[in-house]
Length: 501
Image (cartoon, rainbow, N blue to C red; front, side):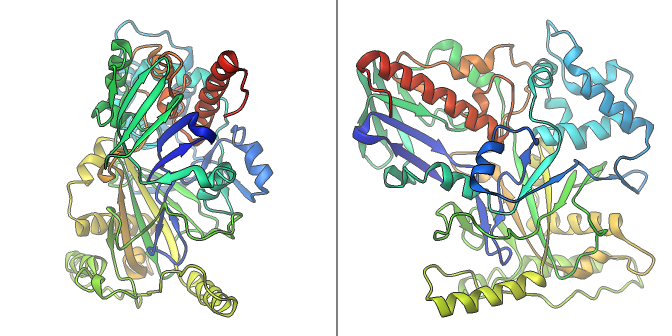
């Protein structure tokens, strides 16, 4: 969702592309399409979460491992020599010297004598979490990230949608926020800027804060007049963002161990899975956010049924077709008895109290019968999966889950419980085209600082790509926003004595 924010008397114009997003209709509750967790118990977001009185569950990450070649499923902390070696190498990478010529994490590990299993663990755990694959990960920025990471290693899961954070931040700006207003051109000088939007609308302002994904700048979707400085253009092209795909799988019953949260899978189709329960409640009692995409209408792909729309009948049901195809691929003599599929109406906005109570009761009943597991894959693997048919992605995902969780009593637990799936492919999202920046091979020391540099006193930059610590998380994006806001306030105070936007 494109958002533009004009401060009072049009003194500052902020243009951003929001990647905190939800899928509506894939489950009885909105499922996160973008960030799922808060990374680190020491995150700078913690103070805001406390202010919002969010309930927080804290998890070690990951809490399970699946070694694909060995078909071995282990609870963390796992006693495995190669696993321990991988953790040691990545924990100590900050002690390395910056190489004159950058090398990939894959080459660095090979230089350290890493086994093929260590390489597989590093790819599935560290590279995938960074949003790339091992050969895309650069040693230089890995060293910086390791030295400057201070958020902690635990994962925090909130009792509310992450969109509540956005609403909390924007609660005093709602009337100045305009959605779906992509910018085509920024004309700027020392006196201010003229913003040209697609469609012809123009906005004049004193300052511009640009927080778009780096892919938008790389594609030159925004024309700067005069052009960006050469050093900034070079840094923009060096720092990379890869793709990420979420495979949201809905099941009629859980087939994973009690207390299960997350598993990292080596040598597997999907490198990571986690379970995602419905939010307990929203801390922002408002209508469904504009950022919440309808699973039947978004550019992401949905596999499976959804009640309440005849337009979806033609597409019904890639999930069913996938199960039928998967059934044919099962070994001869094995039977498949999938649970009866569930469907539900998408929540309606602004209902009367009696209708709302009835809806809440129905929704609670549906939530009790539906279980959600999310697969996450990034980097070149995600780019390859993006080329597959939806059914192929579902089939391969179910096959992997069957292999991971099978028992003598149930050889195909995932397939038997499968309802439907929804695939979120961030490379297909207009004005985003990927996930988040990662420690990039051949990026230069200082590139992130160059990305953060303002152009005079008019054009400012923020967003996770501009974070000096190579931090791609939500707290990094917010920290860069605070930094840029302070820069703008400082300029305004110097010029006119005005100390607020």
